[in-house]
Each structure stands twice: as structure tokens, then as C-alpha cells.
Length: 119
Image 1: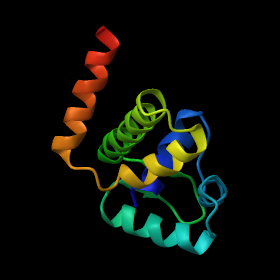
Image 2: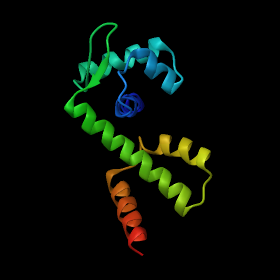
Image 3: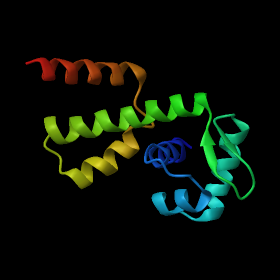
Image 4: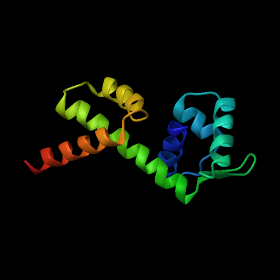
């Protein structure tokens, strides 16, 4: 579900009206898959969606999606800049890691990257 939130957030940041088809194309998944996810996220009150209409994140949905994107970005940055992992591999790995990393480990990664910036 986090991938769907992240995709909607990115699409909305590009000032686009976001529809089910846009999300399916962005993620490379089927429309029925997106439809199920949208239903789940709507039930969780993370987005608003009228049938066949645009999809909009709620305030909670936007905050959650922003946090997911931040985790993804920081993990990818660590993989590429610190470990020297190539861009494509880092993107795939960050996408997997962002969903399972503990809060403690994420905070240590943030602290590490902040220290690296200061030196």
C-alpha cells in the first residue's frame, strides 16, 4: 500500500490530476490491482476517490506518503553515495528496504547522513 501512496504523492507533486490509470502506468501494474489498493487506502481514510474520478490524498495520507518517500530517498542516497551501489540497483533495493526498515535503524541512517553532510 505504501508504494501506491508514494506514487499518488509523486504524481500530485507534479501538479497532475491523478486517476487510477495514471497510477497503474506509473507503477507498471494492472488497473484492477490499483483499484483494490485505492479501495483499501480509501477505507483507511488516506485518500479520497469518487468512482471514475480523481484521487486525492487526505492530510494523513499526504503525511504518510511524504514519510515513505523520504525513507526511500534517504536509503537510496545511502546506497549510492556511501556504498557506491549503481543507481538502478539502489532504486530497486531502496523500494524494498523502505517497507521493512525499523524506526531505530532509519533514525541511525538519518543521523549518519546528516553527519556526513556536515563533514
